[in-house]
Structure formats: structure tokens, C-alpha cells
Length: 327
Ligand SMILES: Nc1nc2c(ncn2[C@@H]2O[C@H](COP(=O)(O)OP(=O)(O)OP(=O)(O)O)[C@@H](O)[C@H]2O)c(=O)[nH]1
Ligand SMILES: [Mg+2]
Image (cartoon, rainbow, N blue to C red; front, side, top):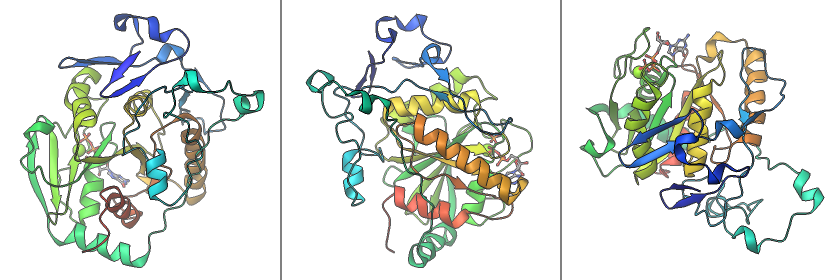
């Protein structure tokens, strides 16, 4: 069993009985907590994704007996009810496995799918988001740990992704500023947790990229924040549209799924692709995410910071995550 906060997650296939030190390559330690991934048990699924895109490694669907889903999880029954919908799979994560009737052959064959939807914010929300993000954005601080944050009253969203994927540029685009955040052609520019207040309504957290520093070092700084913070409302996982998912992106998403933390995928630098190529890549990615992730928000947001495309949709998704819908 893998204890994550209050959640207890068991894995099929003998993983549960193996000591942590024997687990797959993706593990690191933070304080007293150890994080690990069951990469040995993952299998690659065949997909029609473009050759330069790596399909997400399919994870064995987890039974989650007794797992208490975080309120941030968009697929939790509570979350779905909030949105006025009926959760498709209300048993998932709410009933002990022993109490469940054995699934029929038909049920076993059916994959759990999430419908990915188009982001079309209404004018009122779009205007509100423009006002909040562009009126008074300011840099708050660079902190080595989330516990050092000076402002502890605002809802937060974090931007994570590989080095050079465009995290800092996206924050500049959101605030409609050129130099609110320093950007660089060389990877590894952002080294601490940089926080920015948007009109004192919410905080954007620009995180150091992974891939440049060691995964262990990155995890030490980030995982406690993801796991423990009560102000963190959603993590935006940035993927460069032309590169697609890399191993570390998949590792991160598996960890977030394991912790039941809500995250949403943002495709960056979409100006580098034709409209047709972007549509294809986006639908391939959505198909992969709908099959192989648990806490991923059902909407992929394409953005170009340099051409200012998709910025309003991203602002609205952030307001939604922070539950801000009025002045
Ligand atoms: N074509 C294009 N280039 C972009 C876009 N966004 C960012 N870039 C470029 O990508 C490079 C990296 O951008 P950053 O925003 O610094 O990336 P980062 O993810 O913050 O990088 P680290 O802080 O090193 O992790 C810079 O040279 C940017 O000009 C975009 O939308 N389109
Ligand atoms: Mg940066």
C-alpha cells in the first residue's frame, strides 16, 4: 500500500507487497515522505499519436478502496454534483473493494472514459478574467518552499512542466505584461517558487522546470506543496505542443493521480503548429488522457504566449479553479 496524505492507494500486480526501495526508477524523498512510481507495472498502449509524441504509458486501472477523493478532484462525485452532472462512476473510490459485487465480463471490458470538452467561456466571465488578471498583477516573492509564502489568504494555482516549456511566458501572457516574469531561452531559468498576485484575488505560482535540475531536487521542492497545501486549487501541467508528453510529464501525472490532486494540461507554443496539426495532436492527447489519468481536468487548453492565443480561456479556467465568478 502507498500512503499518500489521507489517501490509501493499493496497486494491483504485486506492487503492494514490494518494499519502497525496490520500486521503479521514479522515486524521491521529501522530508519524511517517500514518493515512488510503479513504472515497472506500466505498459505502453498502442495509439495513433504522431511519431514525435510519446503516448502516455497506460497505468493499470487502480481500485481505490477507501480512497478519499480530494475535493479538488474534478471527477469526484462531489465535484461532479457541484457542476450539476451525475457522476458516471460513483462507486469509484467510495466503497471498499470487498463490498463490491464482482464486475461482469461486460463491465470489465469497458474502459473508464472522460469526455473532454471545448473551453468556451461566456463574455461576462471573459471580461471578469481580463479585469482580474490585467488590472494589478504584481510579483510577491521567490520562495524555496510553499510554507515560506508571505500571502496565505488567496487561492493559488501552480504552473509546472519541463524546463523551457513556457511557464513564465504563459504567466506574462495571462497578466498581459512583457516582463512581469523573467523568461529565458536557456532552460532552468526559474529556480524557486515565484508567486504573483492577480489583483489580490488569486496567486499564480511559477515553478522551476523539471528535466534541468534533478528529479529528486525538483520533487523535494514541489511534492509537499502539491500534497499538503490547502490553498492550491489546481495544477496546470504545461506540455510543449510540438514535443508532446515526455517521461517526466507522465511520472508527474501519475503522482498527481495517486494523490488525487486536480490538474489540467495546457499545450504551449501552439503557434509553432498548423491549425490542422494542432487539432490532431490535441485530440490524440485528449484520448490518451481520458483513458489513462484519474485527476486530470477534462479540458486541454492550447495556448500561445507569443501570439496571445488561448489566453482568455486559460484565465477563465483559473477563475473556475479558484471559484471566482464575480467582481
Ligand atoms: N514560439 C513560441 N515561443 C515561446 C512561447 N512561449 C515561450 N516561448 C519561448 O520559450 C523559451 C522559454 O520560455 P520560458 O517562459 O522562460 O520557459 P519556462 O518554462 O519558464 O523555463 P524555465 O524557467 O527554464 O523552466 C523562451 O525563449 C520563450 O521566448 C510561445 O508561445 N511561442
Ligand atoms: Mg521560467
